[in-house]
Image (cartoon, rainbow, N blue to C red; front, side, top):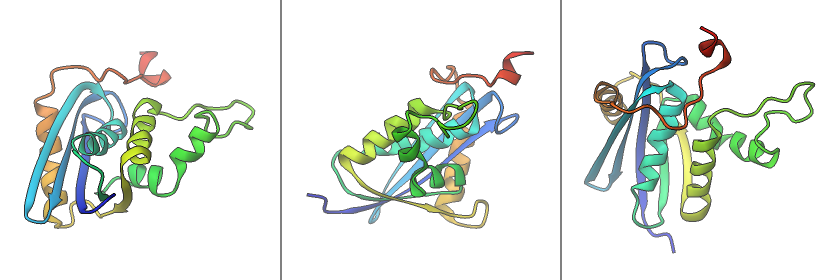
Length: 170
């Protein structure tokens, strides 16, 4: 039985360019009443969307028992992926964005998206909420700083990162 509610703020970043290969960081601030836990990490070869996903994934993986969770993020990519049902639709379509397209395209970051869906489905009642970034929300601002710290301390490449074609062509 799910008994308590947890608020999780997440963030991800990537330098030098957010949607290209670079050094990235992710963070989560978990709040339950007066208790707070912070999670920080990063990778050398990754991108910002993956870091946003890692922030939410590592937060859920850190939970010891099922609970009601609200994940607040300034990433519309993350919030819409799960809040608007994109991930479930892609999974039902074999991870294709539109299987009826002339040239069907696979969804990106399936490794992380599928892990997050599994966490949500097997353990949690999760709601995603978008918050405006850099707008004075203390926990969102803290996550931003922690994600940057994660990028600065990164020392391993992201094991699931796959460069886009234009990045690998040189």
